[in-house]
Length: 491
Image (cartoon, rainbow, N blue to C red; front, side, top):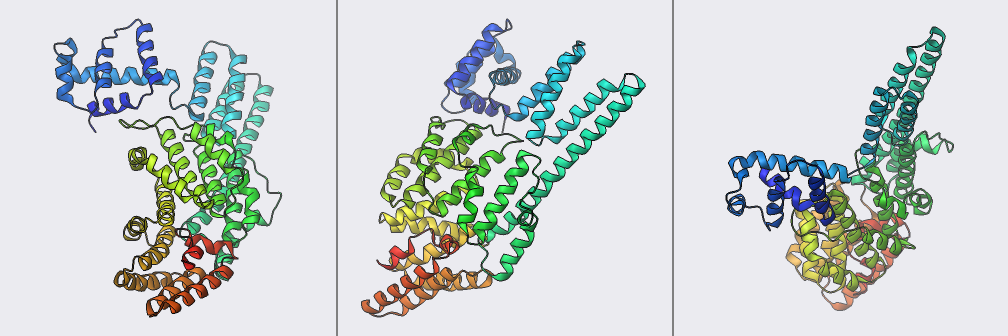
């Protein structure tokens, strides 16, 4: 992207209050403010057009070197945004402490500098910013070692002890993170353990946490990985009741206001995983209030310019959680109305949405559209996933199962016959063929061979009875979430 386009996108990504602050900083700086002319002209544009910009500037002196003027304007806007606090997170906060320490130390205010250093180390440890922690240890060692010989020896001992404590925190962090991510890689493509071997594989990975209930958690992030790993494990084993206490630690309003940055993006991830868990297992108590609180934190989404990451993250989660909750409560018409009212904004945000959220929303939309009678539209969305997504992903299987049912309703029997063969090959080639998947594939096959309405009704009733027994295992419902299969069997 060109520097000109970068400046346009930056200006149009600003909120109204940020734009006011940029102008205020410029007016109070005592420096040349002619760049504000360029800022205002770009702000007035509805789409980036360099030729139009030059015409609007007319004979302004900056036209003599417009490229330099754009760079100067860009830097001034960025300087003002840093002062305003845009995009600040824990990394910014730690950086402030570092700079404050340097200033105080250079002025010989060593006692004040030491207080700042201790505050920096405490906050860095709580956010697992270990490089910053080591930096504080080295600074403190350097400040104290130039003393008497006895003091220097004592200081060295303290320095080494702090190093060892930090290394222990790092080891604790990486150990719990390793367990979580090893399991997550498996569950990304196979969310439930169906066979004895699959259960044994997950149990072996998580066993250090299972075998030591008093496992020492030395940092907040290690505690997060611990809860996520055990929550995922018990859900994959088909025991959501055991998983619930681990996920519940993440479902609260406070997490919605936490910053998102290099050290703390896990805040939103753990909240998202916990919400999906509750919605997958129809544990919806209190979720409406959480979703309402999330909506209040979503600003009006601009239909032009770039969108701040935090705004995209909050919006995409609000819309997918809302639709999923309405589906869970049997309010698919409300979900359809919400999707219709948000269509323009969704189109605006969709290119920046995370892949996981986009797929979950698409599956939720399939269920919504099918439930309100927009069967063909549901088929289009399901086909898009089946034709374009990784066949190993669970979303592919969910869409495939849903598409089988929708194609039957549309009487697209030739397509259905080919799709059924593909489904048998795909599901059979995996080592985790769910009983619900097998029952649906077999049921569709029988329906295609039926010649009378009585036969079809009998097959549907038989399939409903079979699935009712299978769904006693919560894990079996996951792959049938694109369509309410039991309701479909009664159709």
